[in-house]
Image (cartoon, rainbow, N blue to C red; front, side, top):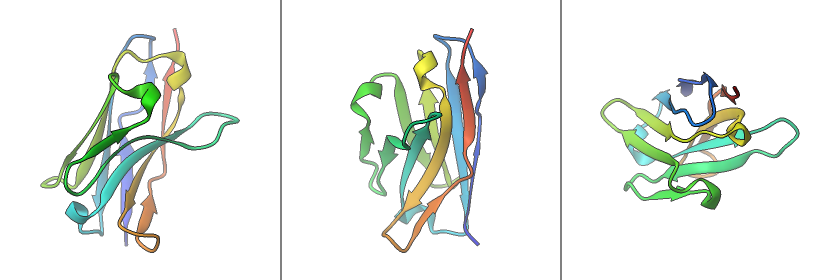
Length: 116
């Protein structure tokens, strides 16, 4: 059974930082492209960042420089370091693991709220 379990969300003031973690089980973690997506109320889910099995990273243009994705294959965990947070970053953040359309999994999401 595949599980992706996110943690690290919460309430943070504008300008603050959070680090999200996603622990995976039931998959050969090192083979997967890992990603973070987010969905704000009334908006579509959007890609935040992704890292391939080879370590290549990709970011939403609007988030480059503030967010950093990383993976630890020894711990089966992917991270999202978020700095200089803004109220517009408020959303549910989802972890995603993908090899192909058949091996494509989502976590349950973690809420990030940026507010003073």
